[in-house]
Image (cartoon, rainbow, N blue to C red):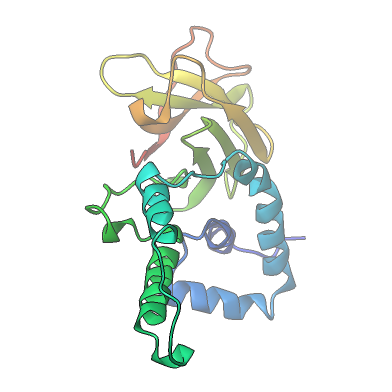
Amino acid sequence: MTEQLTPSQREQAAEYVLGTLQGAQREAFEQALADNADLYGEVVAWEARLAGLSDSIGPVAPPPHVWRAIDKAISMPVDAPKAGWWQSLALWRSLAAAALLALIVVGVPTLLQSPPAPEVPPVYSLVLRDSTQQPLWMIVCDWRTHQFTVNRVAAGAPDTGKSHELWLVRRGDAAPLSLGLLKGDELRGVLPDNANWRGTKALAVSLEPVGGSPTGVPTGPVLYVAPTPI
């Protein structure tokens, strides 16, 4: 269905679904969607691929101070208005308090505390590219569940008798960990128990014998590397 798409269009489709395609590029992409059935199909395919990751992200409970503020506000006595409701100062004050609480509940904690430190998005993407910046594989990582999905964008098959193997390059002196062989259009997996995204420096692809490295570490040349953002 998507044979007519360029690697750049496929990459943009993935970024569009992830929400990382912004500004003028996103507007141009949405205009192209209206006239390109193949591009629309690629977006639908990416939505299906990534649907499982969103299921793993649970709801985030509001911090205790928000509930305390709500409880305090709703327990405040409000005098019955003696004149018309539009003249009641107490009523307008209570409405203002309710509006303030609405802002707090929907996510403005800065009204009650200092701004929190920025968080790493729970799901982020990496692109493994060749020396000409051609995208070869798109990797979607969930740093909370340690799941990952690799989708082929424009990567060709390895030479006869060889395999492409994906590695997690850890910080410090720890040896790389194999995440599997890149064969076919998609690879799904979970990080090993002794690894996590926060301790990861990069993802890399090496050229190995058929079936993967016989030693558990890269034995062939490292062809492509994508640094991780955390």
